[in-house]
Length: 420
Image (cartoon, rainbow, N blue to C red; front, side, top):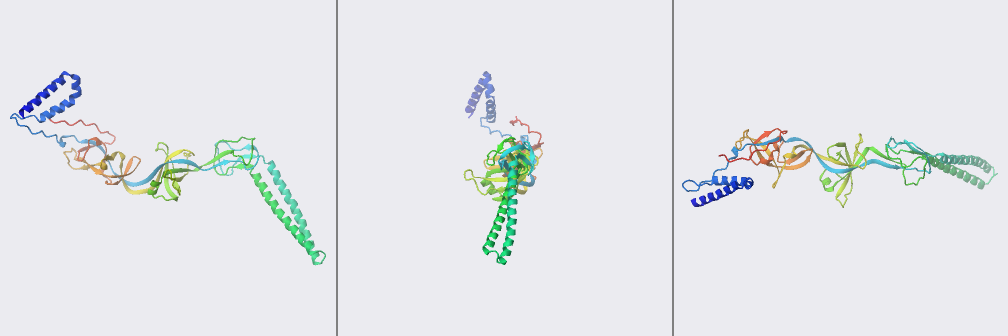
């Protein structure tokens, strides 16, 4: 054994001499040299030639406590939400077209103007339509006069028949003539109503309150009732709708059902932080898209500040449940391991010589939904227990710790050395 030890020492001396002679290699292999020297010192033979026992490694009590930031688990009502992307749609949209033929004599709106239901938007030349209405009224006056004369003749025939001065056949014909004139007057009344309706269509009005878009037809153009081109598009922005497309499996796990529902929902901008509006999901579609496995949900928003624009995309969070007194922790406290999720819980009591009597213990948890930087803990943690949020890199079960302020980042601790 003594010969082996002296041989190993000679080899180490040669290696050290080579490193001294080669500065570049010494700088590269300096850590290896230090470890070899430590191992040699640990296994150095005793003067009597017997192998010495290995030196004990430094105890954890000799190490400085790890510096960590902690935060207590909170207990509060936690909303359970479904998240998804939605498309903003106008509550109502209409392409305003002419319902009669004629020339546009006036445009009565401004582009981008807010209008109310019934406000005039454009005027069609009403003179031809007014003439048709007058003609129908004149026809009715003529038929009314004919009816009045036929009624007088009917009264005469009824008197003559009683005195046998007229036949029953003449009386029946007169009665039929009176009925004919009465039917003609009803037809005239219908024609007059139609003509007046057509005349009313000469004034194109807003069908509902909303906002106008670009003017698509200018004043002076001749339009027809069957034209595909619209004069203007009016959209209803208050309220406004958002259609979400979510996985059908996620909706099925929630408390939402098909048909009419009432679930609170908030929508955010593309950064997922700026709140645009709050509303209510009013409808869950009654069928699933078989190609994508998704289902549509329709929500309504007041849009009082006009932050939602038709055609835009928004991020939605639909509240499907509120978990009473749910335990939450910061997202930074959750750790992932081969056996699942866990956290480091700070506990009191002297452990491994901690200066302030604090140490950490690993705790397996069942994590739930995360939102706004916090995570719902389904199982494994109670409200008030302190969990580590910063400084995990030196921690293991039983590591002594020192708590620092959250705003103060943990400093890098020096590597422990073997005491001389």
